Length: 72
Image (tube, helix red, strand yellow):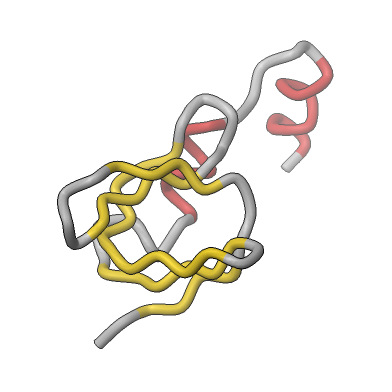
């Protein structure tokens, strides 16, 4: 944890560690973000840490904040 804290102090975000800790990536999820409800596959996170979701329709959505529930 200390090394991650030092990286943050130097302006570097530990994105790879964040990706590695996410159980949702690669799985079908349902995301409620405000009034929106999305269903699709959690593909990745962007450089800001936002969830990149591929909807069942094939469209790509960036979710900044929301409640994520595994499907299936």
